[in-house]
Length: 297
Ligand SMILES: [Zn+2]
Ligand SMILES: [Zn+2]
Image (cartoon, rainbow, N blue to C red):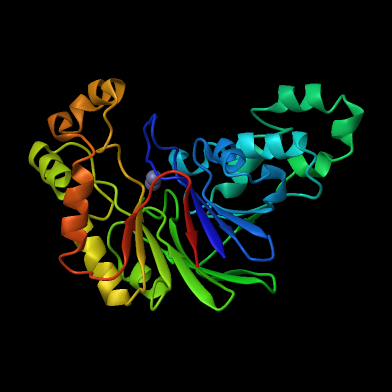
């Protein structure tokens, strides 16, 4: 299988990183998309993947940096002559999100305008997603993949469930964390995985600064804790992703983040700090994700 890291950034607009989106492509050509943050659709095209050929989407949670490209993805697929209804799985609230987007929601006018054309009437099903809100356990099986999820610790569950994911396909296991603080559920999902793709939002120096200044809450995983999780789960390889702009050199981001990030520390050198801290507990193969990074398993 092939994994394409479509987006490896976090919640802010970043000139160098699109938001969270990971595309898994089996050897038989079937695609499975995990999260659909800003840029996901355009990144597919850059990676030579037709968005209309991606029929499966799993949303780990409903933070905007994991879902905000979803309407663009669906409308683009419709315009790219997708046939059949797109399938979207996600936590509680996914149905509300999707049903308020298209013909009965925010893009109602666009739907009215485009569906006046005969060509667009031929595949109206493409803009009517089938939504499944899921619970922990096996959530999808199609004879090619088996996808299991469990609750991870990120947003209070009464606001939105957040899921980590375990995918079994072609005799391999890949686990994705979504967004989470260190948690036992993720260790379980990643147990003996061939590849764990895990969030690593801030380096230790940023976390220390946030603790000192009392800015914001922190429900993510530090590099040191990520190393512990990867070692405890016994994963065969690790990719860290969902980088919270700490490596950016963008003057706009530095100005905008001044209130809640130690901007004087920002820069690509922090990627080295992350590796040192992950390595304190995990010695296996390790890569830091960048947009359009390709992983063959
Ligand atoms: Zn996020
Ligand atoms: Zn989040």
